[in-house]
Length: 234
Ligand code: ARG
Ligand code: ZN
Ligand code: CA
Image 1 (cartoon, rainbow, N blue to C red):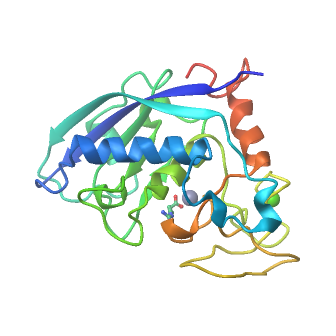
Image 2: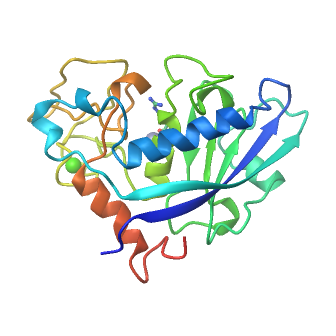
Image 3: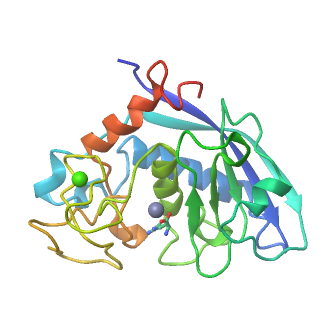
């Protein structure tokens, strides 16, 4: 048992205007959401339906801000092809999680790289208006859950519908199979054999309607930190 795992975080703020040059308070608000969500200290934990409450997990992973870097750049959107990482490379990605806060454009909230990929592009990218809970943020993605979701990918989690039909797996037993993402704030959703776990951070619902990782997702993430695992050096 590894106990509580701490991940040190570097945040790279890349801005083309003063709004995008988000405040230290906005950065801090996002680190706080990560810690609330991954430790199940989120104040909406009691919204998890009783059906899933017994599998909702404290992942015992926490995050510490190691440094914030700021870069002015006239480019106004960066896309999803890692261009921002080529311009501003990750800092010691073996030992630190790198987050670029830069406008992606095209209505994209964020994107992430799974473990085991190229170190030169390792980390996650989130558009500034979906990062944190205070300052330059835009509803309904102003709860910091985009970053929670992207860190889930960075720690090897798939979307709960497995990005396919009912028999496509997310490799987690306690997230029931689904065949599609859920959006907005559903009250119930059955697409395969049982209720979707649409309140899971790895679905596509609104920030205010997400409130859990599962025990199976916890195990899948924590396996990365065992010796020889894909994130052991963090
Ligand atoms: N579409 C993005 C992805 O698949 C993030 C979705 C985040 N959802 C949210 N409610 N914040 O990585
Ligand atoms: Zn995703
Ligand atoms: Ca599953």
